[in-house]
Length: 126
Image (cartoon, rainbow, N blue to C red; front, side, top):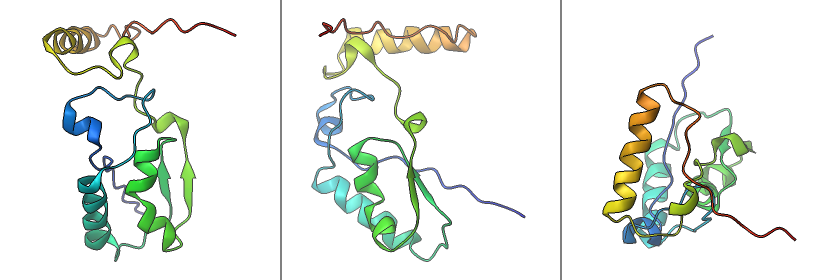
């Protein structure tokens, strides 16, 4: 039996528009444009007989596919689909230093250094 998978990115958020790094640690909602994008995607693909919709745990992904879920398509939330953590970059504007950091990180991944990650924020434990 042949299966077709559709991968989509969430609609726009205000932070996308502002060039703010989100990642898994910033759980922002869709903005008006993002909601229009989600509706346009629904209108274009509502005829497809999807078996199931899988989302990350992030609000922006839930909002993007909400019309499909409301139409009765089963859904499952998977933490493994969350965006990667951008560590110390999350919540910051994408400036030259952050873009250089992204470039260096991707270059290391291309060189098979797949355990390299962005420095994490030290959060106090309670």
